[in-house]
Image (cartoon, rainbow, N blue to C red; front, side, top):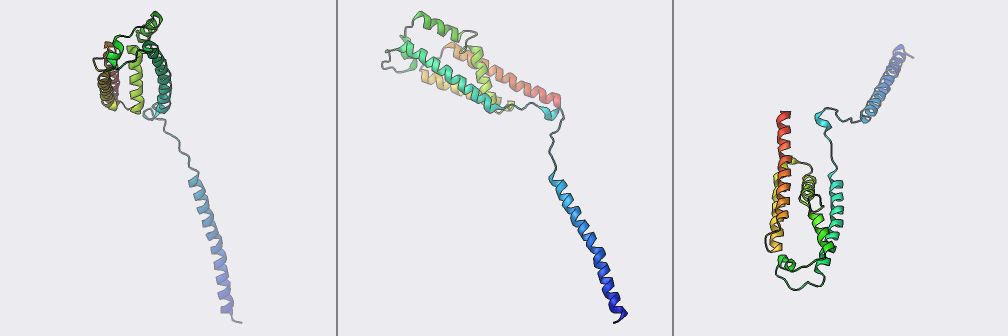
Amino acid sequence: MSVNGVTGVGATAYTTATTAPKQAETAAEKTTAKAEDTGVVYEPSTDAKDSKKITDYSSIVANMKQELSSKNTQLQNLVNELLGKQATKYTSLADLFKNVTADPATIAQAQKDIGEDGYWGVEQTSDRLVSMAQALSGGDASKADEMIAAIEKGFKQATQAWGDDLPDICRQTVDAATEKLNKWKASLNSSEVIEQ
């Protein structure tokens, strides 16, 4: 047996023995690094700019639809009472309502509903129009002009369906909603000026 043979084997064994723990250590470090990387948790910023209130517009729209549905049913019942068996041929909705007579209780309820504090009055109806416009725009005041145009388009379509000029309360409601949407849009512009 030669000394070189033993030395060669011994050197190889020694090198392998010292290298193996380093390789195992490197693998362990990589595993630890991967475990740490996957444990990252996102925490939202607490800056004043990022802490704006987020509104759930889908629930607002759903609530408005539900309320409108029940109020429409109430209005339909009122109209059915008014018309009774008077539904003869007519050329427009205005013609249909020209000769309608109603009992004093129905007239009182209708006046209450369209009064200043009534559900179908200018203030409440324009507020609902604005709330719906804001919800449909996702709270983006820059879309106020589109919403105003949509309200005007609906007013024109209602006028055509009516067949004549709509009652003054309708125009007053559209004007009030337009004014409120313009104020909403202006609030966006004033907040942009402040932020800059």
